[in-house]
Structures are given as C-alpha cells and as structure tokens.
Length: 577
Image (cartoon, rainbow, N blue to C red; front, side, top):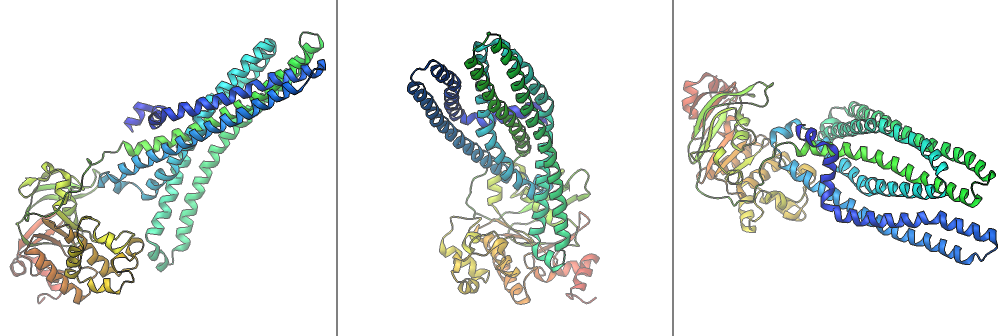
C-alpha cells in the first residue's frame, strides 16, 4: 500500500516502539552495563594468569573476577526484565490499536478480507513484535557494544591480531547484507501462508455442522492440510536463509580463531607477545562469538518483525469509519426515500441497484418483496451506511444520510439481519447488546412482546444463561426472536427486518406478525419478506426486480396490477393461480 511504501517497514517499526522509548533506553542501558562487566573478565583473567605466573596471591584477582560475574548477571537480568515488560506493552498497544481499527473498518473492506487472516494478524503477527523489542533491538545494541568493546581491548593488546580477526569477520557482514532482504521476504510469505491456513480452518469451523452433515470432513481436512503444508514450505524457506546466516557467522569466528592462533603463536614464539596476552586475546575472540551470533540472530528476528509490522500496517492503512459513541435511541418515527440510487459492490461486480426510487412513509409498515437477487437486502446495507451508493440520494427523515452523524443515524435504526446472529455470552448480554442501559422492566416487556418469556423460564439461570457460540443452544426461531427483541430494546425510529420470520413456525409467525403490527403503530417498520403471508397486511408493498422498483401498493392493489407480485402470491397460495 502507498502509506507503507512511503514510510517503509523500519519507520513503521520505530513508530510502534516510540511510546516505550524510556523503558527501551533504561533496559538497554542496564544490558550495556552488564556487558561492560563481561568485557572486564578477560582482563581480570589475564591478571589471574600473571599473578599465578609470578607466584603472587590469587585471592584478590579471583574475588574481583567473581564480583564482575555476579554484578554483570544481576544488572543484565534487570535490563532483560525491563525489556520483556516493554515488549508486552508494545504487543498490547499494537493489538488494541489493531482491533480498534478492524472493528471500525467499513463493511465493504471486511467483506473482502478473510476472518482467519485478520485473527492471525492480531495474534501471531503482533507476537513477533515482542521478540523484536526484547531480543532484537536490545540484542543489536548489546552486541554492537560488546563487539566494539572487544575490538578496542583487542587493539590495545595486539593490533596485528586484530587486523587478522577483522579481516575474517568482515565476511559475516557481506553475507548478512546479502541474506537479510531474503529473510524478510521469506518471513512475510510464511506469515501470509499462516493467515491463509487460519482462514481455511475458520471456514470449516464456521460451518461445522454443515461440514459434518455433508460428510465433508476429509475434504476440509485436506484443504487445511494443503494450506498448512504451504505455510510449512514457506517457513522452511525462511529457516534455510536464517540457517545460512548462522553458519556463516559460526564459520567466520572459527576461521578467525584458527588464524589468530597461528599468527599469535608465531608472535609469542618470537617474543613479540606474552602468552597471557594471547590467552586474553583469544578470550576476547571467544567473546566475539556471542555478540556476532546474537547480532545475526537479532537481525534475523528483525526481518520477521518488519514483515509482521508490514502486515499490521496494511490493516491500519484501510479507511475506517469515524469513532462513534453510544447514542440513546427513541424519538419520533422517520421515513426513508431512495432517489435514483445506483450501486454495485465493486467495479468488477454486477449492478445491484439501477436507478432505485421509492418512498417509505413515516409510521406504519412497508414491505420490500421480489425474487432473490433483486437488491432488497442491499437497501438495508445502504440505509445503515455499511456501503455508499455510487449515485443518487438516500434520505432519512428528509435529510441525506451522508449529512447525519453516523452514531445518530445508527441510533435511530433497529436492524435485524437475515441470519439473526447471536453472540457467545448470556441471553441478557445478547438482549442488551445494542442498548446496554435498558432496565429489567424494559427487558421483560421486550421478552413478552416477542414471546420469549417462556424461554427464559425454562433456562436454568434465566437471563444469565449462556447461549453458546453463535447461540447454538437456542433454536433458529428463538435466535430470530432474540434478535428482534434486541432491536426493539434500542427503541428505534426505523425498524429494519430482513426475513424476520424465515425460521419461525406458523404459530410463532402469526404472533410475530402481531408484534410487528403493534410496533408499526409506534414507529416506522421496513420489512423484507419472501414469505408474503407476513406482509399482506402491510400499509405499502414495494416490488423489486433486477435492481429496480417495478410496482408499489397494497396487497390487493398489486394482485390486480402487477404480474410478478401476482405470480409470487399464487405460488404461496395467497391468491388463486
């Protein structure tokens, strides 16, 4: 995306860490102090060796060496703890911002994304940031300090051996500069493959009963296995490049040791260097093993972190709706008008609305009917501003919906989706989801209107009974009535019901029709119905076909005047064919 390309992954990573810079600096400083204590050890070892060679007392040098070890360990542990805590803070902030962004994305953008991939970005991608903060950044700083400190001490002891060492170690830098971009690219591909695997598994879990009823377990297992194998293959590629970096660093140090041992031995033999100095030099050389290895590992982890922050930023770059606050519902009923509205879900998708024009008067019940694909449910998505029309005007209460503050517009609407989604939690939490401030009396009234009071009496904990994931412990009709009660508790000025009776039996359908008729005396009700029996008593029926409005009127008027409506009514035995 353009924002990512302009700022680059390194700048994005710095932006993630900047709020925690104090903890990073303090933790890094303590780590450096611990490293400084480590740098003193070879010199102290040289002192012990010289004292041993001279027959002097060894107690003092050994105590000094022990104190350096203990002090370095304690200070390093404190620095490590601060960095770990900072890393957890970075992960928390990143997850909070990412979830905040995801839940404010436009519906049109979420439609294009895969839920499993979104979950992967929140979980695994943000977790990679922790290792970057705790290990990579601090590791780079500490490793560079240890490396520079060791080099300075080695230069003081013998600059000839230092040049030999640096000549060999320089090979690591060349190899790392070549391999680092490949590690980042391979890590990004591996994380994308992991997101694809999560999406494939999420698809199967979302339709778990359908999978079992269709005997499709083997096919879904195979699909997830293919995605997992792809993730494994890309992970192996990333691991191969990381291993190449590790082995090059190890070989450089080993060859440097052999070269120093050969050249240093010759210098000791010639009298140009003391044996204790050679031993101390070799100790510093071994000290280079750890910082070089840590530096290589930290840079590898950074490439993983850069790939992760790139994926996180991809979500942050998507346009989001403005923040909304909870606005109390209630108020006078409102009407809706569509004027020459045109809409398609994407430029490469077919036209859904092609000049749709109609009016929903204030109060009473208006119904949208027509064959599947006519564009009825899209009307609700446009009224809720889940999508923006390509052209035309949609007005609520005489005002263009684009001029409404989004929170006020949605507070005026009550929306019951076709599949009546129920959230995991208690029945009370589901009922009050859209209106958290309602009273027990209001809940009881809504339950009675939707004929749910019997259900509450049967549940073991009443309103506080958990309904299971997606309301699995409720029947389809009960889930639909819970969704309607939830919408009524919002006290909407316009109630949108999308196939509100599709999962109800004849008795409960009749009861719900009575409820809707009662609600229509208080507010405006707009109903989408394939089952015409639920809307024959509507004040107005709008017939849609192929993205257009072809007729409107009462049931009796449309039976007389519109062939399509007459055919729909005849197939449902509402009129003689």
